[in-house]
Length: 402
Image (tube, rainbow, N blue to C red):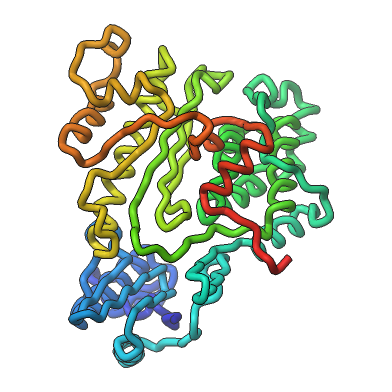
C-alpha cells in the first residue's frame, strides 16, 4: 500500500511561516521537519489501532489477536502488510484508508527496486534486483559487456598509489562517474547481494580520488553482476528456524594502512539476513586479533538481531545462545577462557565484551573449517569454484526466468 501525499499529514509543533507570511498548521514537502512529523502522526494512528512498535526498528509494527498475527512495515510512505489472516488484513487496510488517502497496490511484487518471487508450493521466497541491475548496466553503457565469474580476483590488490599522480591522469578520471558507479553497486550489495560486499566496500575507499585501476575493478564488479543478474536471494520454509552467524577476517589486507578486513553474515531459513564487510579500525598484530575483532563486530550485530527477532516472536530458538562460527581456533579459544594472553594484553577493552557475551550464554562461538566459512567472500578475493560454493550457501541462487 502507498500513502498519498504522506508528509501533508504531519502536525507541526513549531510556528513556521512561509515567505508569503502564512502560518503552517500541517507539514508540507520541503520542510526539514516533514518526515519526522509524518512518522509521529502515523505512529500515533497505528498504535491506537492496537499495533506495537518494534523497539529496535521503529518502522516495524506487530499486532496479535489470539492466533492471528499481522506485521506492518513502513518505508517513508510505502507500507507492506504480512499476515496469517485475511480478515485481519482487510480490517487493517480499511483502518488505514479511513485515516489516510491510500492507494492499494495489491500483493507486493516490487519494493524499492527489489522484485519479490513466491513459490508457495515449494515454500520458497526470493528477492531479485535483476531490473535494477539492468538499469545500471544501461546507464553506464555496459548492457552488452561480457560476464566475469567473480567480482574480484584472488590476489588483486588496490592502493592509494594507483590514484592519479598528475593533472593529465586527474583530467582523464574527471569524465568518469566513479562515485555514482560505485554507489549503484553498493546499493545492490546492501539490499540483496552480499556476494559483492568485499569488492563494493573496497572500491568505496577510493571515491575521493579514484584511479584507472580502481575504475577497471569497478567495471569488473558490474560485469560479474551482468553474469549473475538472474540470481536471487532465497529463503525456504522450515519447521525449525535458527539464526546462525559466520565471522571472518583477512590479515593486514589493506595495502595503504595494513588494517584487516572483517566480514560476517547471518543465515536464517537458508538465506542471508544480515551481512557486513568493512575495514577494521585498528591494526591487528596477529591473525588471532584480527579474527577476534571480527567476532566483536559480529557479536554486536548478533545482539541486535536477537532483540529485533525477539520482538517479532517468530523464531523460538532466539532465546538460546545465538550460534556463531569462526575459522580461527585461537580466537575461538580466547573467547571462551579467562586466561592471561600475552598476545592480547594490548587490545582495546571494548573487544573483551565478546567474552562477557559468551559467558552470559547470549552467543556461542564455535570453530569451523575454512572450507565451510561462508563469510570468506566478504574479506578477500577467492578462486571461482570456492567463491561460487560460498555464495550458494548464502542462499543466492539462479532463477529459471532468464
